[in-house]
Length: 309
Image 1 (cartoon, rainbow, N blue to C red):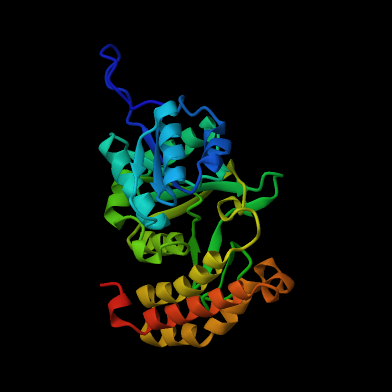
Image 2 (spheres, helix red, strand yellow):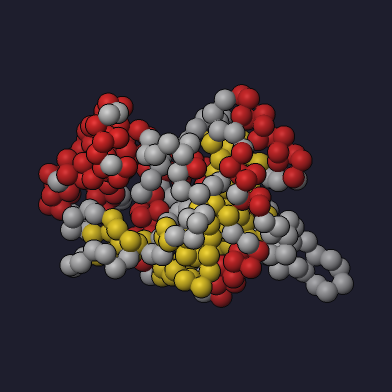
């Protein structure tokens, strides 16, 4: 990868794309997926952000970044996805990047796709762009999604019906110009994990930006890789229950927030059954996570401090 330096003969090289990957735990996913493709032709700077897990994992991440010549932002704590992404974006901008591509450590894309995403957001700096994202076997995983501002349900694009649907893009693979990113203020770090991409998408559109899914471009996502491959984790359940209500408090009227609060047990049940009721009922940890996340969300939804200024 390159830092976009002046070669002195043909003039300044174009500003590079900053690819930001937030890692937690060992760097195996990063090696297996993100580093699978040579992206040096883009040009791009791959910035690795490591949310602290253990001293041993930190040593492994530092070793990998030294060997590959990758900039590393080593956070002293696990600050969550949003905070990690924001820290990585700041480093990429410092390195001269004019656009940012956020990529999960269990996701991969080739140089052609990365270059096309870069060109898209440079040509239209008020547009956030995602490619179509597929499973490793080619099955679709993301091709656009909607959130119902009436019910708080999220589904792939075209599934939900009715008024007040708002599109959103997945943070698993998301490109944005550095200027629009700065204008939006990055991810809201209070989500910690999940729903921060829904929040960013809504703020983008309300601020006059545009969302685009390039169906002709493709990234591959090893879904569940960051959760260890064992199905939905208690962390997933907790924050999906919590952050739905935080999102409501950030963006909706008081009356609508209360409606989302009333339906929060139904949402918690939907989150639990995403891996099947049998697994959920056999795992008290998942049920406790759903209860804890819902309670946390209700507290946030009722807190004046949680409202966006």
